[in-house]
Picture (cartoon, rainbow, N blue to C red):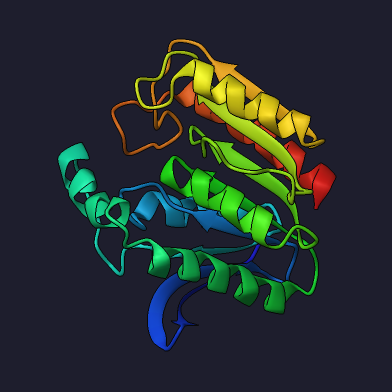
Length: 224
């Protein structure tokens, strides 16, 4: 399938923020891609390319304004200012990206997030419940979130033993979603670690990643 790749800029409260947009020939349903705490590294652009090859228009905003972490310590340093109250621009960016994608597709969209980006995916789905129809979570949670406003179908992929996302917290979030009346399916993968779908990480597990993507594309096809 022919796809068109573009580096674009989003106007976020008067500030220009970079984003990566990939469109299949003839357009398609939109999927917002929200990266993990590494920044918008090549892997997440490849996710967009993969989505476009399956017929989706994919948009990934750069939540770190060009900064990329290659190690966990570097990622913690980038994430630090956000945890200290600097998340307003990031929230405005994910919502601006959502609006931009909706403007291009005119239909309901999906959103897929990885780790930190998974939490932001839930923010997006809650902020615009009538427009976000499908939410995919890769090893990320948002503990204590009120899910009552959400309407999106949800799929989640988690490691059974994850030092960053304890299984009890993941299952508690899933139950909270179900209690809010949401359609939720969580998949748990044995003998893998956090970031197991990211092919540039030492935690990458090709078999688990392949299964997770197979399930995700089936989910998107059904709900978008």
